[in-house]
Amino acid sequence: MINEAASARPEAGTVEARLRLVEDRQAIHDVIVRYCRGVDRSDPELILAAFHDDAIDNHFGVVLPFREAIGTLQAARSGGAGAPSKTTSMHNICNVLIEVDGDSARCESYVIVMVRIPQDGGATDWMHAGRYVDRFERRNGEWRIAYRTVVYDLERFDEVVPAPAGLSQARYLDGAVRGKRGPGDFSYQIFRPSASA
Image (cartoon, rainbow, N blue to C red; front, side, top):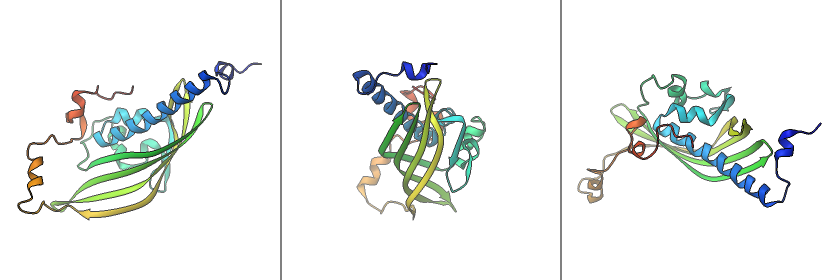
């Protein structure tokens, strides 16, 4: 009996096979980037679209179904009905290593995250650097995360202080466009809400 999926794959080493590998890697990278956008913008549809429905996530040393794994997914769990997070964040993807093996892939993405946390009338910046170590699976032609472990390599916490008096650079921000959680963010003027492609 012939495996239809295997017979549909181009022969190894051919131009078609190399192009398929490039397409697969790009599709996986796009999932990672959209996930980060989803967390930073509190966009539940983007977060949900990064994972298979039965995906597992180990964010803080506890292995859970991804919908229960971490507070930043609360918006996804509530379907967007809950209030947006009071924190702001920025996830920066750095080195990404992707090894594709048929309809599964192993992926390690270095990530640097800044989270501003309101606290006692002020704020604390939490910076952490680590890695998303993921197993991706292609199901029905679509790559999504099946299993994620977040590895923390280093972190620091810093009190947010006002700019020194008279610092001219601080005035640059007086009229600047500021990032926001949710669809009020400026980027939604150019991207479709919850764009998955």
